[in-house]
Length: 209
Image 1 (cartoon, rainbow, N blue to C red):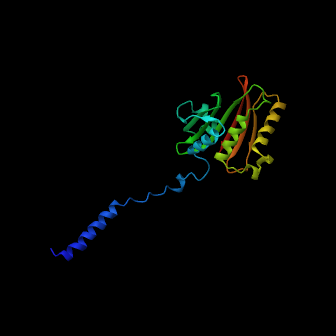
Image 2: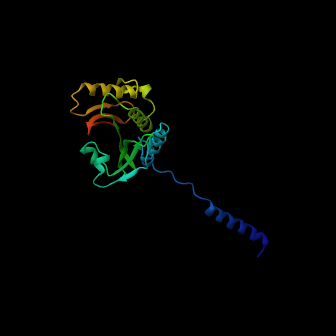
Image 3: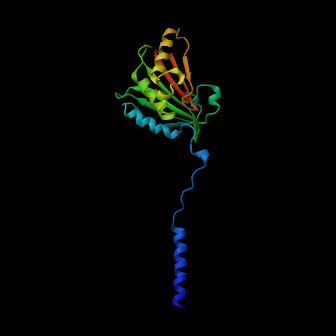
């Protein structure tokens, strides 16, 4: 065969092979899978990093999908009915003391709620610093770092919101949980609860999409 004919054929063969060897650009996931609306299960890593800077340590998330899911990832029956997948982590202080846990629940690719539960001393007017640290980290990681700007509910800071709830609970009979709800910070709803249980006070922050 004529060498002048062979050269173009070889070039075509090499070019074709190169096309197959060049990796395709990965296709972008659809907008439904970009988690552009609210927090995701992956945001627990942001929470873990922020808490470690404050000497509060979080365990690796454990998945919960059995009948105990309501123990970690539900606050009402209407919420529980929407949850089929939950992850929960334990949080500890620098001395190894258990502080509580942080959980997220929803469906496997999209949480609809997050809960931080922190146990404090048996004196309601002696709130621990860990309550503020954990709650502030949750809000800034899952909603936005914009509380000072928006001041939802008229509270100038997360600390002011927690303090106001504490004062109200101290003045109450304390026979029922105190609940304070805040909106206007983002698309999420924030619920703060104080409950007396087993000779200690439980401080709960719930973030709902």
